[in-house]
Length: 385
Image 1: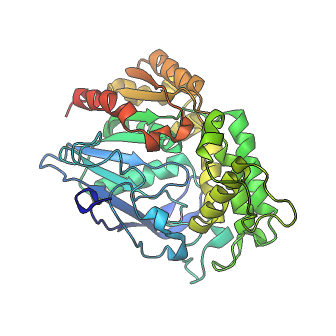
Image 2: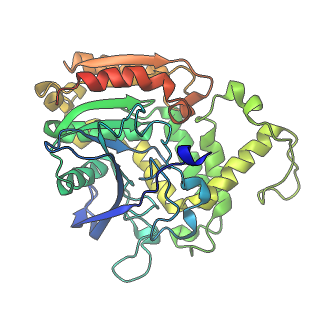
């Protein structure tokens, strides 16, 4: 990358609204939210975009950030460049010359927001004591962040699991929602992913180093977390093209195997992905955010008896939705976006449904911004200021 193309240096900011009580009734004293923003908020505070990251993402969506206080060894070099660098910036689909973009680390995460790695009031890390969190908790903490930044209403963008959080926010705060862009997501977890995530949690729990969630940072359950990632990673890529994507030769045990030697490059690829991930993420955080995904319940979050009732505020405020599906997505298959669009239509909420063709599966939203740019720009132009 030459100097002209180098990402702009950015820093993570921190916001603490005081004590926060989760949906489960657990009080988190002096809760902290790590966030970044890109672009400039205009005088009317009308150009804000609130971005929710995916399962294991972070607040660092754009630019270059080589250090985040409090993250220790988890902030690896692969985190330094923003995870949506291809989508955010001057002239890009989320144009920072036009929009003020905000992204916060999910509550329960490990990149600066309060989570299992954060200090408990007794001075030790929360570790296994940190509560489970729900999408409604994420929506409420982000609403507080918007108020702190002087933003009354924002357009929501949520890829993957972030799309579920965007749904929760729109249901709870329709008057603060200008529009919703859901990419490779849906409105309820599928049974196959409920089971897959349980397998991933089980992989972590069965690692002897997990210790019920009370493990030292220098000796985490890395093998269990790596295996969890391997189980989950199958849904993030297009399996039909995996052999061409796994270009490295087979071989290497990656600290995971004792006798068996990988015989196919796809096996080595998965071992590489799993062990690399285990260096940059926390096992307790993975369980919290993964459980948030499979426990997502829009009706419970909104206190509603039906989808239409949950979306009543969006109908009343005429909140428009743009729903993207990816034809090779195994994580949130096209049926999930078709169902979401159909439910929104029945609820009287304006919705546009778009599908992209990709050979990269669920990861397309990270790797191929050009597939989304035109429809996203047109939608943003239609959302009233």
